[in-house]
Image (cartoon, rainbow, N blue to C red):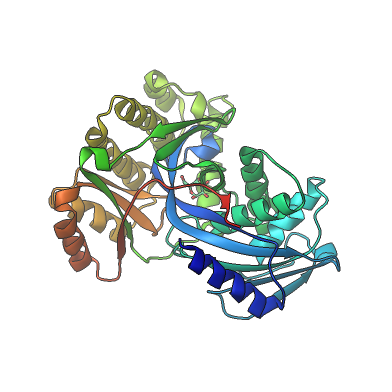
Length: 381
Ligand code: GLA
């Protein structure tokens, strides 16, 4: 992003709120390379940050009001009283910044009102974590303006809590952690139990590779219950086995665990989670060995598992994956929560233009772009 673009954005803040912002921050969306529906099972995930980001220009207020405005959302300025914020009170997109402010205050941080102007290049509803970008940019801006230097993982946990408690969606911590903690040129290996992190170099260009994101534009909704049912199913499976989480089943113990489970649905959920944790380990080993193109089949195996065992794919995502593989892609899978959203496709760079055209012909409504691991949340001015 150029300085001129930043200046224009800060002028937009002035047009809305009649004064200059105190600063501007950015936080990215993410794709998940591998490790799907493992975060709330205490397992492994491996997302990376997109270059698409949400920006927030912010100035504090001392009259107890939170006023938010978005360049993309209709409805003008949304004004809320900080003292009145409570789970279940707000609605629409402003729920997310309200939830973050409420959660920060509930955690004991002395943060008051603010004027915030947002814009975003993260596709909304594409399963690319536009809401995590909105949460994280808000949390980072409000804490830094208050002179707080919270560790990034703590910031992500607070954002997750804001979504769990205030918004009411039982999501794991992957998306917020990706937005807060990812670094350019790396995928982030997060071990959700203990929250250990490692930045794993993920250099596509060095091997003549490209990663395409295919946003099917089929909408998904976590809060509608399906995500919660999957999570509850995984927790029930772990409980039936007397384990804290499905993470505690080693890959070598999978068959025994499956034999001990009472019904087919719990067996399917368990098989996905255990094999998916294994696939994360396989991808890490390949990336560490500089064998990036060999991750393709592992990604595809992840899709098959999400489609057949977890059952959260959809015809459009399957069409993208099948078309990509039939056209010579090295690997492809749905990414994110499922029920629509986006797929990722690993391809040789030379083959990417023809593949993109083929995918466009198969799914004309899709939005397709090549991407590289980008920077996590940061201050712009
Ligand atoms: C959504 C959630 C994440 C994670 C993924 C599935 O993106 O927000 O916490 O569970 O789905 O991997």
